[in-house]
Image (tube, rainbow, N blue to C red):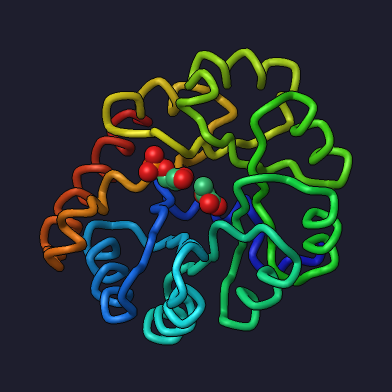
Amino acid sequence: MQWVVSPAAVFAASPIVPVMVIKRLEDALPMAQALSEGGINVFEITLRTPVALDAIRLVSEAMPQALVGAGTVISAEQYDQAVAAGAKFVISPGATAALLKHAAKSSVALIPGTATPSEMMAALELGYDHVKFFPAEANGGAAALKAISAPLPQLRVCPTGGVSPKNLADYLALSCVATVGGSWMIPNDAVAQQDWQKVAALSREAVKLATDLRS
Ligand SMILES: O=C[C@H](O)COP(=O)(O)O
Ligand SMILES: CC(=O)C(=O)O
């Protein structure tokens, strides 16, 4: 792969990758700044809203020191749009052969979503050794990931979907888990009220918890 920023660098940059859904473009920068104030400088801005690409562009330009990525990328066309907007990495909920092959030719890394040994093996066959386990809790949580990853020790995994302070310890205890994805530090009510202090405080608590659990 000829990726400028490796998935390993993304995983190493933060113990938590915040999954961001931005409905109002005006929220993009304050949300990213609040996460950063709390110690999180990797952002997954999901292409789930019409303003997502503009948000990626805005945050990338305003916060060049941060690693701004795109999430919920499910097609090659969206991949190219995210890259054009400035995404430094791309995350997908799934792992189609078309997307994996497209991203292998790109300069921007893809972290594909996988949920089964077969999907992880298919990703490995195409050179992907950093994947997401999605949706983590609905697929059996840390116990399932522990069992699935045992025969695939070369994989580094970011569990996402239902990860919270309650189960963070179980995931971080697994040797395959380098970082987790989650949205608990960006609750919908705080975003609706533009309560960025709350987002910053929850981010700070999340980073402290992850750091304490790892030490
Ligand atoms: O689709 C949901 C995202 O992966 C984040 O999941 P979460 O809200 O359970 O953390
Ligand atoms: C679930 C997730 O992380 C994504 O939509 O890419």
